[in-house]
Image 1 (tube, rainbow, N blue to C red):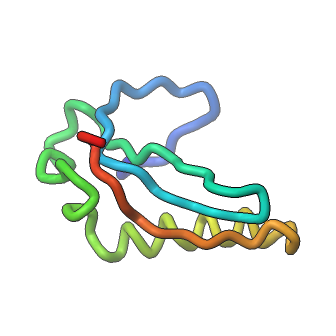
Image 2 (image 1 turned 120 degrees about the vertical axis):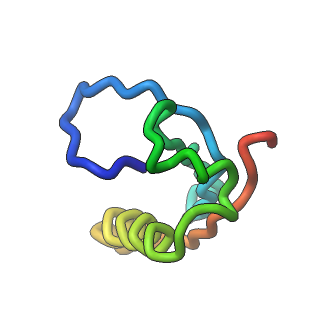
Length: 85
């Protein structure tokens, strides 16, 4: 999660806050949800429970739109897990 646009190959020091759990016809596909390590705007996000509802919807929409561009791979998505797991 970042508040500004980035570009391919951009390196950002980050910290994990949890997992974004997806499942499609090939099985589980977990993504690590991270925030910039030193950005004070994300200091309060320590776990997936701290992710603002709008950001969760935005992330869900991104993965649904990406995966449903190939109908056979329509995903089931859930925000879950914590950085400790």
